[in-house]
Length: 232
Length: 232
DNA sequence: GCCCGGCTTTGATCCGCGTCAACCGCCCCG
DNA sequence: CGGGGCGGTTGACGCGGATCAAAGCCGGGC
Figure (tube, each protein chain N blue to C red):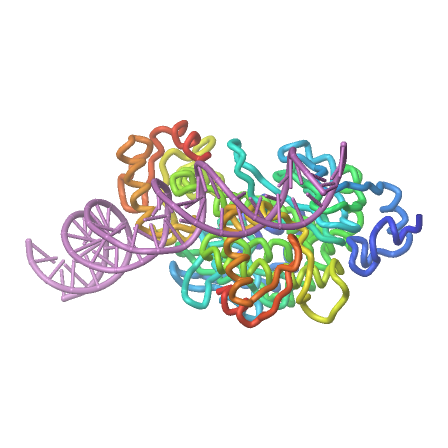
């Protein structure tokens, strides 16, 4: 296994910017792991023993109330970083949505390595700041948007992120046709809606000719302009 | 003006962990600024020319839709860091809720300084990770909690944060009595509710003897247990 | 091919919260 | 002391999305 493989495509991975020697050292403390769809990687409130780097696949970060309501608070795509370095407990559960390959590190090992490699910490900081930006714009959606706006925003975001992370046939710009890594229930958990509402909104957009739904999880954006207008 | 003053109480400020020489260098590129209640510090989508460190007061971070709906996506207390280093545009507006004192830096100056001082970047990373955790648990609230749960959660969070940032008479643990730095409308903007719903829920809690409302913005928690139970 | 089970869609109804509107009370200022 | 205005409260009502229920669809196993 080459160092490049363990640590993902070099240019996009967490280790981008490290020199060869550093990459080798990082690989020494990491382990590859396969996680199949539906399998958990980290449980909410556990000791946060792991951090990881996504190589392939999509995973969800969730928090739940005691009575079982779930909210997806983040989605990790290839090259994304998962887990909570420098903290006692993980505040979110991580579960694979598709079969996934990740590179896991013990939190202690990773923390120690990061602290002595400023380039890595800088990269991590940039990623965390970007994630915070995304999360904040999602708060706007959860707190203030209507169901149709939520669905439209969601579809547009999916078409962008799936394209840029290479989860769809490579095209320039956002994808017009893609396969959702989510079930209807999971879409509901992302948007703070119920499964029935999600289903109804999808059907409505299809009837209006804005999108097409060729298969359960497949979406084709027919009229992107309309979607942008609906997104609010 | 001593270096300590410019850069906030040493132990809690962004510069904690820097040596004296570094603190002096950081002070050289920062400027004190007073912001009065209601005054903006950064506008949404501007060029993100500023970053800042809060010395005193409380500020809100907001995003808005074109048609004027507003969502408060973060609240900055003393010692908190504001702005978006290493990014092109700021995604949120920053407006003071109370009269505030901040230490502002030009983004370029700050970026350059941070990149050459790993201790500062590490501190910034820890803060950003903590903020991300808080933001994610707020997503759960926005997406899945009912109005009574939102209000209860909000009051408990306020009682903790206002105590730990020294915005209330110092006590051990969470404050039982405090002054909200928010108007009713702003509470609504934090929780994704309307002003009327916020008002009704406050009144309900008062009638049930869970809290007392001695003045417009003052809250006294009478029955914390009940509040915790309601928070969901 | 056929059956079974889980996911999804669709329909009917309900209710929490938003909306619209009026009123209240505190504070400022004359 | 007496307006006036702003922020907050209260009430009446309606709607969007949740809830409850049932049927449809599709994929997998035999």
